[in-house]
Image 1 (cartoon, rainbow, N blue to C red):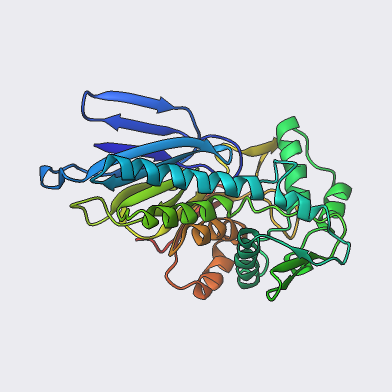
Image 2 (cartoon, rainbow, N blue to C red; image 1 turned 90 degrees about the vertical axis):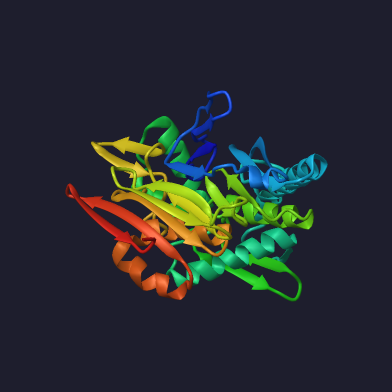
Length: 352
């Protein structure tokens, strides 16, 4: 059997999943966008006692797919549904698209000098974000809500954000403006009008949490595709790892084999703003407030999916030169970054 997955960037758009079923030669197509992830395995009668189960549900604005191996139908179903429930609960709390979400309620209290007690999930995800922000000199920033919202509108309506407006919204961003009180699990947003946006690592976090749920049911071999952010568990029975084919977004392809890691890819292939003959990515540079111009594709392999998710954005923003400095601060991480400028392509690949 061969299962093919596609890559999604950060928000509500869908990717392309091509599922090829060798039993009956049927093809199922779920329309979507992005770079292809091919997760391959070949069944063997020796492992017939462990069946492969696939579950899919639309969550966080993306198709989420869970693939697990189990010798028990009931356990497989209960594990998958419990994992989906965990993801749903995270979405209710962390989605900036929901007016009633915790993250929006917290943002509404910015600039009040009030210490806001937050859930364990939001506190932990912001701690992770803060750590990555510090180690990448702000290339990743969870306070970009105001500028991200402006770019969403600009991309949707096809206009370029006014420079005065960009300057204004940038004044309400900056990871240094989030204060933490670990003893009370509270945060403080120092600037009025700040807005949190964890789109750069939310799906990766959800994938990691789903894996924890599956493990609690005794599931060892499985994979979560959280809108293109992958959390790989133990390998399929009889295999050394999950075989994945990744593309640079142009003509370069690599086949890799991994287990028990997180993976994420970012790129502006399908979400961008076209203006005056230039293509601006939906990924915004925290320092300029402008969508990236030269980024083609970034793939990151990390110990966890949440780290891979955040670093895919951070390295996209930092570019190759600065990224080579930052990766020293992230042991056991690998990256494949492709840039193009003045028709010249530059590649940095540590995945090989």
